[in-house]
Image (cartoon, rainbow, N blue to C red; front, side, top):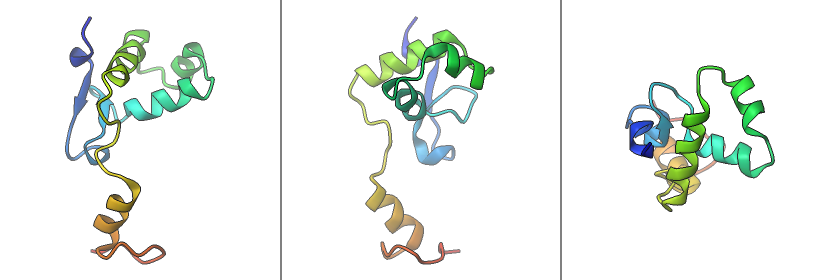
Length: 92
């Protein structure tokens, strides 16, 4: 199985982060859990709508070296607040 069958980027979902198809679960989230020591069984218990194959696809996607997030925090804040300043109300 190829990761492309299970991972997608949708601009309107999580700012275009790679996600498991049909969910709002990012590859970044799954990899953070795995890298933090959370086992696959625990992930599957907490997210029963994903599968072991989805987790395997996340691992394969991460191994490509492609960014797990399209924006840095600074870019995200600048887009959200318009001027990059923190502790301001989001622009309408």
